[in-house]
Image 1 (cartoon, helix red, strand yellow):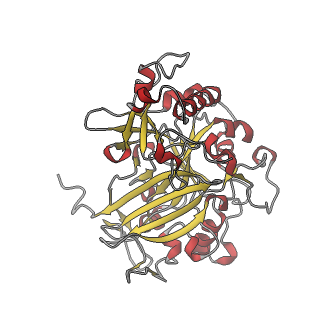
Image 2 (cartoon, rainbow, N blue to C red):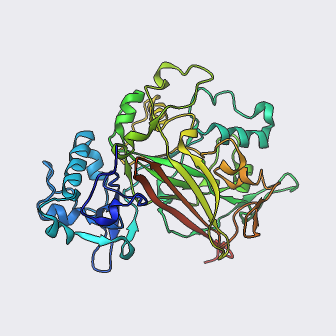
Amino acid sequence: MTLLKSWVCSANSSDTDFPLNNLPYGVFSTQETEPRCGVAIGNMIFDCQAAEEAGFINFDEGPIFDVPYWNEVMELGPDAWAKLRTRLVSLLTEGVVEQDTLSKMLTPMSSAELHLPLIVAEYTDFYAGRNHATNVGTMFRGAENALPPNWLHIPIGYNGRASSVVVSGTDIRRPWGQLKSVHDKKPHFAPCQRFDFELEIGAIVGTSSDGPVSVCEADDMIFGYVILNDWSARDIQAWEYQPLGPFQAKATATTISPWIVTKAALEPFRCDAPEREFELLPHLKDKGPMLYSIDLVVSLTANGQPPQSIVKTNYREMYYSSAQQLAHHSSAGCPMNSGDLLGSGTISGNSRGECGSMLELSWGGKEPLEIDTGVTRSFLEDGDGIEMTGFSQGNGYKIGFGSCFGTVIKALRDPYAR
Ligand code: CA
């Protein structure tokens, strides 16, 4: 596929995250307007609520864009998603006769505030990157026992909290927690010293299910994808995680990028999962290419220094696709809801500069990361900004995700002070 030309000139550049081929869904507000649904096109946002009110978009079900979230569209299912996308492409294509009227429905992205694009129903996080799991396992259990025995057979996950999912740009306050290192005789309550990011892709479940679903059914249920930073308190996790897994270590915040990139936009970039060491059980088997080639970059802005790229990797490094994770999630009968968010698990390639967390980049803090500006980091410090970006490279165009950004701010002096 090549670049589709739009009458919105900035959408025709080979550099923009948001050409007509992309059309990701978000929620924005301006000084004059309350939050509303919009579509990113070049450096502008097309106002879906205004377009629906003016009769340019019609759903059989009645008005859909009278609410500031995409859940109502998601619930309508794949046929409605395809119909809406076709309609938006036709409205924004070069040469459309209603261009003058439609151009009044554009807002410059620079003057808009972006909000969470959906109401997150529930949030589940997986641990499905083989390099990440191997690195972390090697650090904690030694190379011989790096991967737990179940790892190559099921996508391991835990149930997180939807309430702590925030949109890009939200400051992240360093948490306090119960800590006990191997040198401590007893635990104490203090600010986290090993605060970290995790580079992930989040899958957004569009349609609900009741009972087990197949991998193909699961793939059809997914509405789109975002970049996700699963902020992690490693020292809290080290003390609390056995036997039930992480809890408060992952409870501070999870940041997502503000634009939902649809499965339709990513379709040309599908790729196979890696070769399987053990054949997966039939209900989890790959049914064609279900990962996507998405180049991912993490940049660190250390205390007012210019941003420096510290990680480069690709989503195709995952061992399990979101469809396989969703199928597994449903396999014991768990109903899945429209608006559920599934974190892929940390995405790491096979070299140090491709690792999607500080834990791996500094090898547990033992080999601090040295950055070109002379700064070194084992874990994140107060004032550090972490930005994650990603795109799939097409022929003369990109399918970009926008920015997933957050700044770590100082812990409260005493979180229980009233
Ligand atoms: Ca995670």
